[in-house]
Structures are given as structure tokens and as C-alpha cells.
Length: 425
Ligand code: CMC
Image (cartoon, rainbow, N blue to C red; front, top):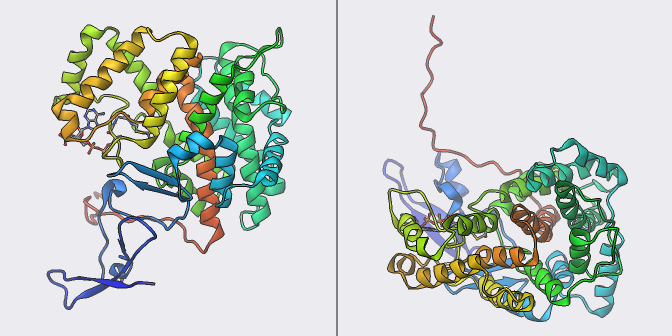
């Protein structure tokens, strides 16, 4: 498989160590460092900035060019021409579905949208003011207690059934988290609605009156799902792969992904964006916050700006920005004060030398937070919606991991602690 060889010499070690170099279909070549272990060496890469932890055929990102491909298809084309159900099929199966396959897939997902009635009792154990991500971590992990019939991870059919169940039940569970905190009754899913329409119905419908899904908001919701569906080996996906590598069941693995996503440096950023805009509060205070973000002695960062991989405009942010304009126009709230702050902030960051030099562009979470707020989704639900959308990515990577020969993940370390010493007499 290796066409090239990297040669390494190390002071104090005799000879040259030869390391195979592999080329993927796109992206940088990778050096296979496994022979180093036999020479008593490890590689050192905190934050995994230079480490390919696996091979994968699902998603490709070129951060410098601002390219994101799912199974080869550019994200902007998928956002424009496709929908979330199709993207789910694509990520999971590798190809776009034809009309029949899509119909069957949508039908399968619709038939799994209800959660076991017993699961709804779990919610009562949480405080009403619990963060919905805390509840979601718990109830998704708890799904493993309900579906013993499909937990053989070496069985392809079982793996697919788990994927369908997770994708189908996430909107139901996410909406239940919201309904529980607001004290309203849970709404059962409606399988005659689209995936996004059903989610809006379960969020905002009540048993007291009919709920009509606004098609613009339904399309916007679907786009948010599409744009968050997968993003290669990010922190939460790597967490799911690592948890999966031990043989843990898929529901537990997805719960671990939800936990990893929660942090403000990852999926928690969309919530953090809104919190930051509220804290800024007025256009007159923007300069002060920008100065704080630029101050090397201040840990404050502008939430929704920058990305580990993109050193160019996040291609998802471009589509999200357009959707944001459409939604705000439809809802007639172009003059929202927080939105004004957001637009000014965006302009400053795109022109300011500090941000330009470091290639810190607005990321997907900057705009998604604004859209979700406009739709009426409370801030603490933003990361839940990210988790809902990303479930297909997580489970596709988990499935890919288990579809080929694999090993338990076990990173090593550069030990800097005490060497052996005796317990005091
Ligand atoms: N505001 C101000 N300065 C920043 C920011 C920011 N948002 N992001 C990075 N920098 C600076 C940073 O201080 C450093 O400056 P210097 O070179 O002078 O020390 C430089 O830019 C490079 O930063 P870094 O920490 O090496 O970058 P990273 O790749 O480790 O971090 C990040 C990426 C996304 C964690 C970071 O940009 C950040 O904290 N952004 C805000 C949180 C956010 O919006 N996260 C959502 C990411 S998109 C959703 C997802 O895919 O999960």
C-alpha cells in the first residue's frame, strides 16, 4: 500500500528508521509511525493536530480551501439540492438513494420515531431546570436498556437497526427535553410530517390546538440538520469511535459523543454565541469585547469565530448565513437588537487585522444560533439540536469502525511525573 518511505534518524539510536507513507484519495499523505514503538519511541501530538487516527471514506475537509465533502458531494450542493433524510442515507450507505430507496428509508425512520413509553418516566427524575444536554446524555445512554434485540455489534443488520433507531428517536427525545423543562406535555411524533416538520411539531405543538408547520422554518430546520450532519474526526466523533473501539454498545457510544459535544469549544459554541451577544447587549460595547478577545492576557474569545480545521470561510457558514437572512426576513425580525450586534461583530472580525491574520472567520455556530433564536428555540436547546443532527455522523463513523478490522484505541503519553519512589516509612 505504501508508495513512499519516510526516513528518520534519532540521536542516540543506530541506523535509519523507515516509515511507510500512505496517500489517500485526497488530503495530506500520512506517515505510518507504528514501527517507532518497536524502537522504544512514541510520537507526541497533544490535541491530535497532526495525527490521522483512522482511515475513513465518509467525509473530507480541506480547511485551507474551505471545502467540505460528504461521500464526495460538496456540502453547499447537498444543502441546496438534497434534504436531511437523503444526507443520512448517503452518510450511512455511501451513495445517494434512488427514489425507491429514499421512500423506504424515510418509511423506516418514521416507523421508529416513538420512544418506549417507559423511557418517558426517566424524565421525572431530572430537575425541571436541568440543562437539556444533561437530560439528553442520560436518556440516550438509557436507550441501551431498551433494545437488547439489536446490540450485536458484529451483526451488520443489528448495527443498521441501531442507526435507524437513533436517527429516528433523537428528535423525539430532544423535543421531550424541551417540553419537560417548560412543563408542557410530551407530544407524540407525527409520521405524516417530514423529519424537520415533525421536530418543530413536537417542540411547539400542544394538545390544545392544531399546529401548522411553517414551510420556511421547516426548510431552515432541515438545513441546520444537513449542515451539522458530519464533520470528519472532530472531538465528539473521535470520542464515539474511541468508546466504540472497546466494544461498547452504540447507544452508550452516542451518549459519550453527546457529552464531548457539549463543551463550548465544540458544539456548545452556538449557545455560547447567544450568551455572548446578550452579554455585549449593545452595539456601543462591541469594541470593548473585541479588544478583550484580542488581549493575549485575557482568555475571552469571540464565540462563533475560528475553527481548528478551517483557515478559510467555513463552507457551512456561507449556507447558514443565507438561511439566516431568509428566516429573519420571513419572520420580519431583521431589526432584532442581538442580530444587529451579530452583524456588526461579523463585519469587524472580517476587517480587523487580528482576525484576518489568524484567519478567524465566523463559523457555522455563529449563524445557526441566530436562526434557532429566531425560530423560537431557547438557547439551552441549541447544542441539543447540534447533537440531534450529528447523530447520523457519529453512528456512520461507529458503523464504519465496526465494518472493518479494528483495534481498541489506546493513546500513549510523555510521562513527566515522579519516577518510582518508596512509600515513607
Ligand atoms: N477569538 C479570539 N481569538 C481567537 C479565537 C476567537 N474565537 N479563536 C482563536 N483565536 C486566536 C488564539 O488566541 C490564537 O492566537 P495567538 O496565535 O495569538 O495565540 C490563534 O487565534 C489560534 O488559536 P488556537 O487556539 O490555536 O486555535 P485552535 O485551532 O486550537 O482552536 C477553536 C479552534 C474553534 C477552539 C477556537 O477558534 C475557539 O475557541 N473559537 C471559539 C469557540 C467556537 O466558536 N467553537 C466552535 C467551533 S465550530 C463547531 C464545531 O465544529 O465544533
